[in-house]
Image 1 (cartoon, rainbow, N blue to C red):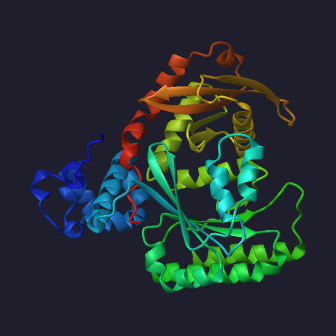
Image 2 (image 1 turned 180 degrees about the horizontal axis):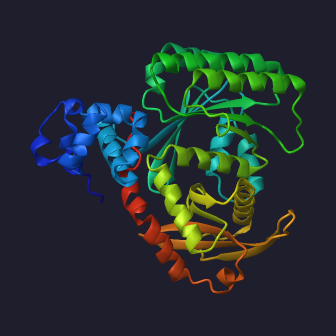
Length: 413
């Protein structure tokens, strides 16, 4: 039986644990902070738990010049934990909203994300789907964190409820995914209008969270019309103009249940972005790749196949590696047994680089992961030492692994 730790005991100095108004506590109350560090936070106006939890992103770059990022991230995570503690609805993890009008494929995204096994079984599940009535909640464990997927049913009767009572559905959200059916041309304008309405209610709630837009049902043979390109371009521009956290270069994905890697890849990107220690994970992944002489390194969650830590020299190698990974896991019959996959790729470029893709299951800290490497170094494949690889990954990512249990703040659901 797991021991439930008191949040105050875990995160506050003893003198402050009896306080009830946690939001107004000075940052010196945090267990893992020194007086010299507090002075710097106060210089940026982050003198209370509440200000640190809500305004850290305004000063993160300046603070990272003064302190190691992992220390800053731990203060942020602790302050958010303490702030949410007031709701008495603590769940470790993150809350992701899937929104869009009816029949755009929100439920199919959730099923494809969590599905393990043959592709034919996936489509059996999808063919049996009925429209979502109201709010549908699901949970996915990724690297020890509970990811809560909240699918908002898209029928108009439910849409009106979300828009009229937004606090009930949107408070505590970490990121919003808006799903558009690219094949439903007769409903493009309706989808665009609903997108605007959701943006309006989140603005009223002052909910400044990352947005992502999925142009779903982008099946391999489907070609967008001129009308689609025009309206979708307007959607992207609207989000870019009205949602400060939306990045058109990183917040757009074409997804299809016929290309499962498109869904897993998109969610991998989202999960990495909602981590409070994203930059630290990226730096650690780069160190692992350099130590192993790899052009790509990825660490995937064994349960969900989400890539939570990665480094790639360029986007072309990243796409190749992800596709190779997702293709491989579809063909591994028994994921419970240890496995090793080595496959060669000759890239279609001037240098004709001979890349070696290596897939390996790993275990450390009593957790199981899947590692993917892409390298042109023959010796890496010839002298693959699992213990050595586990030690390298453990050494570079150890701090993150220890921190992950509260790396993402709890969500009030």
